[in-house]
Amino acid sequence: MPRMNGKTNRFFGGWVTMSLCVLMLMAGFHFSVSKASAADTLKLGVLQEPKTLNIWSAGDRWSLKILGLIYQPLYVRDPKTLDLVPWLAAAPPEFDSKNLCYTVKLRPARWSDGTELTSEDVAFTGRIIQEFKIPRHISKWQFVKRIETPDKHTIKFYLESPQAIFVSRTLTTPIVQKKQWEEIIQKAKGTEKPLRTLLRHKVKKPIGIGPFTLKDWRSGAYLYVVKNEDFFGSGKTIGGHLLGPHIDGIIFKIYGTSDAAILALKKGSIDMFWWGIQPGYMEDLKANPDMEVFTNEKSAPGVWFENVFHCSSRQHVLVLPGRSEVRRGA
Image (cartoon, rainbow, N blue to C red; front, side):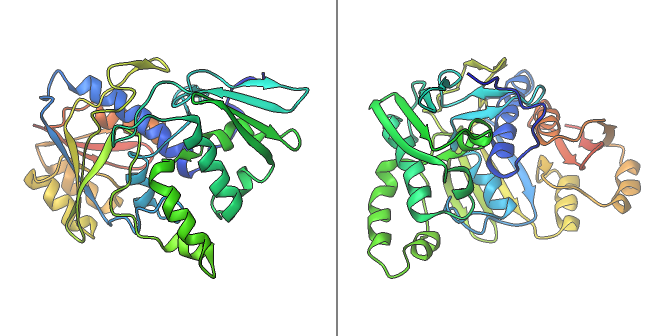
């Protein structure tokens, strides 16, 4: 099979990046346990709320941040080596060069409603993308000739021609639950414009397979996700990382402006501001005896996410893009 190495590949944004961040978030929660009770809820300040929880139409960064905690792909990238790590998949894909076929085996996992992840969910995801020509995903799936599910834990992808992006991009697509989406898809097919109907569908309670699930969303105020008790990675070492989460949930508080979020950080109302700040704020923050500024030479999303979540959830952290971070003492 082809070597699963991402050093020569660029980040493709979207879901690969989000999955990478989730991987590091899990590792970070593990390291924070010694300082923070497992009953803690992390409070994050954000500028905006998601525009949608519909995975097919989500394109803004805030929607992707939230959905990246709920939906998961077959493979994610290791934040240090950029190699692909089996995630929902149990092992690297097996490649049959004669038939241009990749075989993927699933690890045991359950959706947030307690039902089992099966190969039908994976095949269903791919077929939706192909049939509706989902704009954000179709370029990664249009060369897949057919998908077979010989058993509930095995998926076979047959390609029309060799494609270098199949492993790195197609197999990093988030997987949806067939049970939740099947009726929605059938109704969309019966409309005059199926794709538009699907993209405009309002999702109030996404059923995912990630470390968190949606608990409550008060538009303009906050969004609250809680630990998915059925998360397949809890307490396991995957890709060299011992996974959590070791907190009960995350509250995303919506502030609208950096001024409001930074004020909340100073007051201790939030533990972290999940956004970059302008240099003009720095002198004020450095003058605060409770603030600590430190630098990081790396700027990859997974790296800064790892640094943030190595901190106690009772500390207050402000993330700066690129090289600097600000932390408020407990």
